[in-house]
Image (cartoon, rainbow, N blue to C red; front, side, top):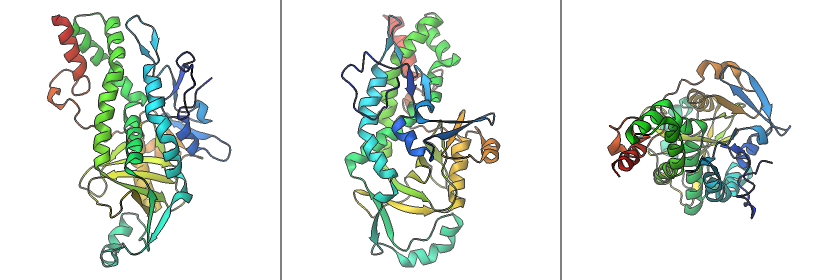
Length: 342
């Protein structure tokens, strides 16, 4: 039986840990289902499959950590369930619900500026607003969503693939002067601490930036992928972070715009042109899978699949980037050197 992360854990959760782990929590993938209760996965080879959330975004023992004795440890799965998914589930569901949108009127609109920029706004694929729309989001709720967004950078399969790739394992084994099997267990054992360090750093940065909600205002839906929190460079300038919430609504985290609102996130309407731009970025940064509510635009996806542009990073352990494996495995190699010297 697969546990639905986002609900309260049972009292004997540690004893009944399932072997199938959802890197894309079911409370969220359910927000992407069609009328049949399913969503479509398209793979890098162009094949598609339609599945329920129970069988979507799931991988065997993905969040299982092997302890020093080689036994499976539930700490990471429990940590994600209790500290990330449980708190954010009701908040994200509300943000994804179009009926939660508030209309504030036109008092805060700068009509003179809108008139000057109307051609540019249309060129970029946005609708020109006649009033301000927003979604309520207090600081504590924003922190919960930021932690979930950060978790979707570090919990996806490609993140763990980096820990387990041949170069990382070999570099750790050489530094610690141990065999490859022991190195794999040692890296797995340190996975939780590395993930928590990255998670804290990403969350801190995301909370400092400005947030915008984009609503698809045409007949094109947003897409999701196995690398869903992506960096985007829109119209030149700084890098934003884009994250789809539902097929009709997405979150944009940016440093180049200041919201006039407090305890709320402003909402903008995006035409098909704008939705297509962000979908292209989603597909370009996908690793193996892209998800859609209904029939996916297969030709569009296969044309752009996996041509990764940028990988999100906030220079965690930046002072150790000269170590083999770069920023990502620097703490592993530091521990290996320390253990060797004992």
